[in-house]
Length: 141
Image 1: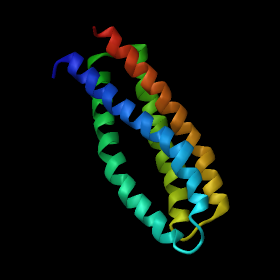
Image 2: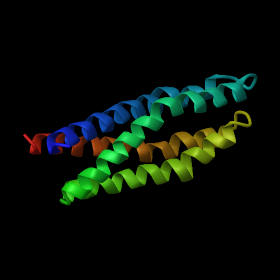
Image 3: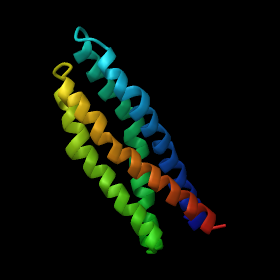
Image 4: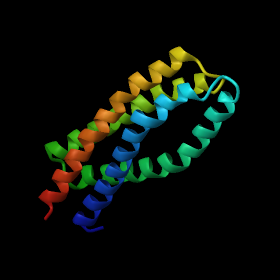
């Protein structure tokens, strides 16, 4: 794969996820508290199933492109972007997924608050990755 194509795929996936995480952080997660106790469990389970259809493939494309970029170009920007991706994946696995699992039993205000608060880590990390992805696009011109 040509280097500039890889950089564009990486940037597209990263910016798709950056936009998505901001929408989730500012709109979607806060609205969890407005669903109400009755029906919340079904809502949460539907959320988890449906959001996975969007996030899963995009995260895999982003990760694959990041690994290929790291192998092709081991500079500080690429390595920093890869490090931020590790932070995102670890945060997802160890912070957000457990909170979603807790919420899948019914609304829990403490789990919801923790979900919203800890998700800022992913939001900031993806935003920084987005900035680096734009720099990498510019650097390959």
